[in-house]
Image (cartoon, rainbow, N blue to C red; front, side):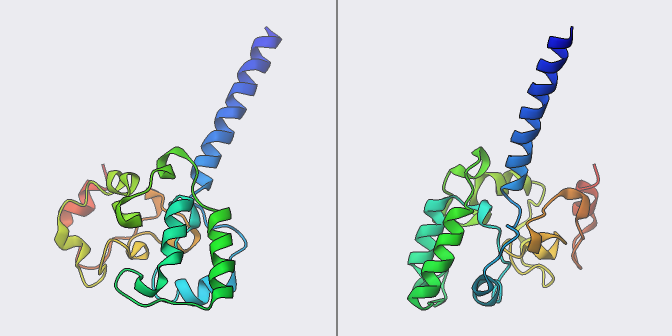
Length: 168
């Protein structure tokens, strides 16, 4: 009986470690390079590196001169430092391991699945939202990599039917 209890406890601890890793992969690492905050998070949400796989981050960092329609070029030393940090903290768990189209977080399978209730493109264009890439419009903990549904704030102008959809 004790052996079964220990085996169950061991299995549960392994499960908990796996769940923690899967959730923790999206969290912002505790050590954030100042250049990431100054350069990347100055223009958009400072995305947690775990939201994309390493190859996506490598392509993004190698094409900063054409960064989604903007020139976000940085000096080589900063690119090297940020690339190393992004690679070291990139997503490796199942939900993030596949590279999304155009290396866009908002085009990843997990993002689309989590936002399936937002089925009206006009929502993403609300003045209070601007685009699907503006995570902080709804997720109060986005800057820390926290995207749980418990801490959603509904942006101004969001139609009632969307508010109700998130309450069920």
